[in-house]
Amino acid sequence: MSVRHFLSLMDLSSDELRALIVRGIELKQMRQRGETYAPFPHKTLAMVFEKSSTRTRVSFEAGMAQFGGHALFLSPRDSQLGRGEPIPDTARVLSSMVDCIMIRTFAHETIEEFARYSRVPVINGLTDRFHPCQLLADMQTWFEQRGDIAGHRVTWIGDGNNMCHSYINAAMLLDFKLSIACPRGYDPDPALLDAAGEHAQIIRDTKAAASGADLVVTDVWASMGQEQEQAGRELAFKNYQVDAEIMKQANPDALFMHCLPAHRGEEVSAEVIDGPQSVVWAEAENRLHAQKALLEKLITA
Image 1 (cartoon, helix red, strand yellow):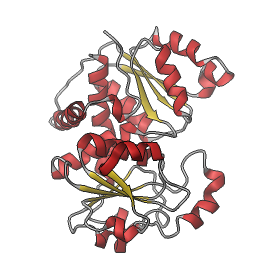
Image 2 (cartoon, one colour):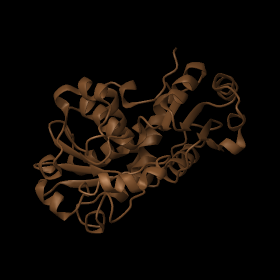
Image 3 (cartoon, helix red, strand yellow):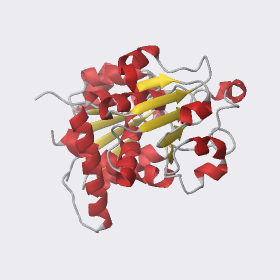
């Protein structure tokens, strides 16, 4: 049987994505009831981090422990990748010793090359192009709060970054409408937009983009690796903050999400992220449960 990797949401079918979301909700309920479910005794997940993390590391490490398995943390200082070992060599060796590999890195090509030489599943914990694990958590949070997202309207406000790209993929798979408000020069990949067809569109005006939205989502203006661009991005995005006026354009029961960490007063006002429409804490917790569902699917496939 061929190895299944999870490098983007498009590695799943629509039915598989919905099943993962439902399974994540089930696993969360099982944990809340205090049930023990440990399907992975003696199984090991290698976690390769070239970008720092809080939620990604803790959720994967805790998830494997709850499943009865073990997770290994590898930073560039802890592995030969940091000293220039070729990616195929590391992939061959590491995948001969563990049952699954999660990588959080910069270039998406790095994880694609790693997956080509790995004999075990490879999970994208984040690249500069996609952040599919976060979308699993976001969609689980929506399904818990509102049911299926098909036919609903989602508004993305901010940079056309890896999160925006993954929302475009999610719109295609789950059949919702995505409006993207971003300043010129910070658009998402046009090839991804073209592939999405009527599921995604750019609307420059933030209020127009948020009009009638059921879910409003944003992210930091400068992602990891873009810190030197912070000042320029603050100028470019100064009119792209999600504040109370933006949320008033959305439907009255619209939800607000942010993948965190957040910069209050920049991409989102404190009033919104700490307000009643915000579900960011449930969203963050669901990284654990959604990724447990993903690990279960990939390791037992």
